[in-house]
Image (tube, rainbow, N blue to C red):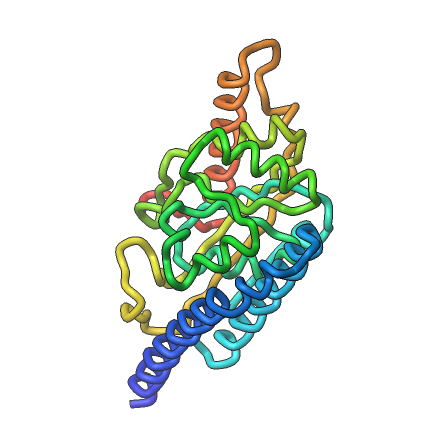
Amino acid sequence: MTARLDYLWRFCATGMAFVVFGVCGVLFSVLVFPLASLWPHRASRQRAVASVIHSFFRALVAVLQRIGVMELDVSGARALRAGAPAIVVANHPTYLDVMVLLSLTPRACCVVKNAHWSNPCFWGIVRSAEYVSNADPTELIEAGARQLAAGYTMIIFPEGTRSPAPNRLHAFSRGFAHMALKAGAPIVPVLMDCDPPAFTRQMRWYDVPARAFRMRVNVLAPLGVEQLAVHDTTPAVAARSVTKAVEAHITQHLFDYGFFKTGN
């Protein structure tokens, strides 16, 4: 009986959390974005919006933990708060990955799907925060390099969408590698895990697990892009070598940390 009541509570709490997130996203789009557009100084406007987003997601993560929906275990988060611009490259098992990383990274800019630019819950956020669309690969690289030069940490999920299975990744796209080579920025690999699985590609919000899910985040040591790239070759070949190296590095560490399990 107690387990049943606990499940019903987490089911209702999860639904309410999604409602609050959606309502806040719409309010941000119709109120904060129009007000932010009147701010005369673009750089300080972006910093203020990034701070608001970071604070909102920190509060949302804290509430989800307090009400017993999720647990959060983070290792190495200091690297995300260091302030130096970098490219965070993470695997993408759940819908909540971006929320968790934004809650841990004070000055963040994200690469987001082009579809989010017309989503009523997101369009104001992505525009006022000057997030980068993945619609145009060339503009993605240029815009990302500009954000890095302005001191922001770029958060990128190179799979492009949520992982296809608990022990498998989509092939990484090369945009982050081109961006790192152009800006000379370090790459910070981040491992994400959710146990039991929740909000995966195969699940809906109402597929609430039998117990509170535990999000684990391991921030690995930064990788210097110059050490990963094949030299004396074309930018395309250099980017391909960086992408393969980072994908192999993250995959191996997912097994090493027990996020992926051999034989499953």
